[in-house]
Amino acid sequence: MPRDYKAEYAKFHSSTASKRDRASRNKVRRAAEREGRVSKGDGKDIDHRNGNPRDNRRSNLRVTSRSSNRSKR
Image 1 (cartoon, one colour):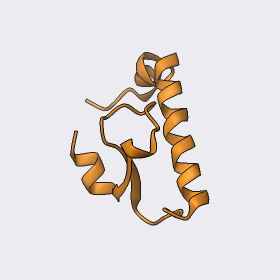
Image 2 (cartoon, rainbow, N blue to C red; image 1 turned 90 degrees about the vertical axis):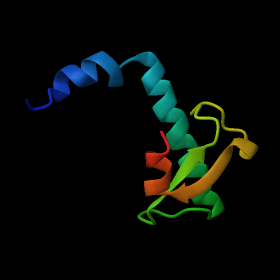
Image 3 (cartoon, rainbow, N blue to C red; image 1 turned 180 degrees about the horizontal axis):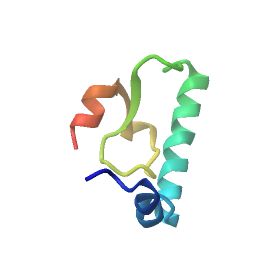
Image 4 (cartoon, helix red, strand yellow; image 1 turned 180 degrees about the vertical axis):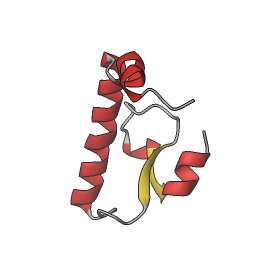
């Protein structure tokens, strides 16, 4: 059965909480790019150690490879 992307977006991705989480992740990524910690297309992710994307304390953030960050959950 193929994925129904429209229904998936309506159910999850468009919720207020998901939008805030996504905005917070993007904000941290942009800040790390300005600091020179990551660059576009480098295959790195900004990892939130405690899994909370809104907890942007510097002690909670680290730069990891995309594969290790996305496989830990």
